[in-house]
Image 1: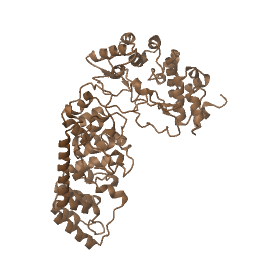
Image 2 (image 1 turned 180 degrees about the vertical axis):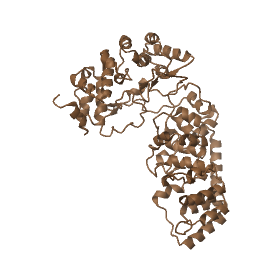
Image 3 (image 1 turned 90 degrees about the vertical axis):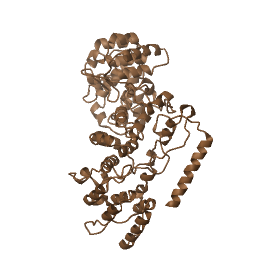
Length: 555
C-alpha cells in the first residue's frame, strides 16, 4: 500500500465517504483510527467476501492489536461458504463469535468448519438453530446451551422453523443446561462451562440483528440507544437505517402473568425489560439480580433502582457490595448532582437508624453523596436524626425537615438550635416551610419557622438547582392510578410518568416513573382488564376529588 497500515491507524478524523467505501467493501478507510470507520470496516468485511480476501485486508489483520478485523474477515468468508485456512482460525482471538449474520452459510460449510476448527463448534451449533440444521446439531454432541435454545425457540417461521424447534425441544428435554455462549461478552466458555444455566432472555436472536443504524459522526458513542448486544462487532452500522419491530412488543397475557407469579426456572419469553424495571422499582432483589442485563443499563433502570433502594434494605446492601454495578447504573444520569444511587443507599441506611457509614467514614462521604430524602418511606428514630445532624452539619436542613414530616417536635427544636462553625443556627428555607404547611402540627411548626425567619432576617428564595427538593415523596410517591390500560408494551414507556418532577432524586423528568397503572391492571379481574365499569370509574374519581379538596382545606 502507498500509505502504511500504521499511518492509517493514526488518522482519527471522521469521513463519510471513507465509511461508505468500507461499508460497500471497496477500500480500507484512510482514517482507521476513527471509531466509526472501524465499525464500518467490520460491517463491510462481514458482507463482502471478495473484499475480505484482498491483500490490504490481510496485512491489516496481521497487524498487532487489529484482531477485530481478522474475526470480521473470517466471518465474511465462512458466510460466503469459504472455509478460512486453518492458520487463520487456530488463534482464538481470530475466531468470530457470530457466523450466521448477515448471511447463513450452508449446512455442509458449517460441518467442514467444525472439522478443521473444533473450538468453533458452539458457534456452529448456534448457526444450526438459525438455519434449522437439526441433523448437524445432533452430530456436534454439544452441551445444552440456553442461548442456542432461545435462538431456536424464536425461529418459528419459514423453512428453518421445523428443524429449529427440534433443536429447542432437545435442549429443553436435557436435565441440565450449561452456560457456554455469552452474547454480552461474545465469549465461548469451552474449558469449564457452568452447569445449572437457564433461559433468561439474554440472547441476541437472529431477528434482532436486522436492525441497523446509518453511520454518522455521532455513532461512535456506544452503545447506540436501545441496542443491548453487539455480537457482530460492527455496532449495527450500515449505509442507512433499517428498523426492525418499530412498534414496541405488546406483552401477551402469558407474559403479563410473570408480574404476579414466581419466575419460572426458564423464562418463557425474550421480552423482559419491563420485568427488570418493575423488579427494580419494587426493590425485589431476587428478581432484579436475576433479570438485569450484565454490563448494560436499559432505559429508566436507574430511576427504578433508586425507587427500589429507598424501599428495600436488601437491594441497598447488595448494591453497596457491588460498586461496579452502581457506577454502571449512574452512567444513565443526565442532570443533577452526581451519585444519586449512592445517596439512595445512604438514605436507606439512615431510615434503618444506621448512621455509621455517614458519621464514621474515612475519608468522609463526599458532599454530593449525602442523602436528602431520609424519612420516606420509613421514618427514622428521633435519636438517629439528632445524631446525624450533630455529626454532619451539612445534613441539618434535611434532618430538621424529617422531624417536621414525622412530627418530632423536640428533635426539631434541638436540630434547629445546633450552631455551625460561625455560631449560626440552622437557616430556615422554603423546603422547611413547604413541609410545615402539610404537617398535622402546622400550628406548631409554621409559627416557629416564621419567628426564626424574623430573627435571622432571612430573605427566602429558591435557586433553580434546589427546586427538586420541593418534591414531596412523603405525600406524592407511588400514587394509585385509574387509567384503564388494556395492554402494556415491553419498555420503560409503559410506566413512564409524564410529570415535570421525580419523587426521589433530581433526575431528568423523562425518567420519572410509577407502577400505578400496572398495579391497577393486575388487581383487575382478567375479563375486565381495560374495561372497568364506567359508573365505578366516575364514582372513584369523585371520591378522590372530594378527599383532595378536604385535605387542601385542612392544610
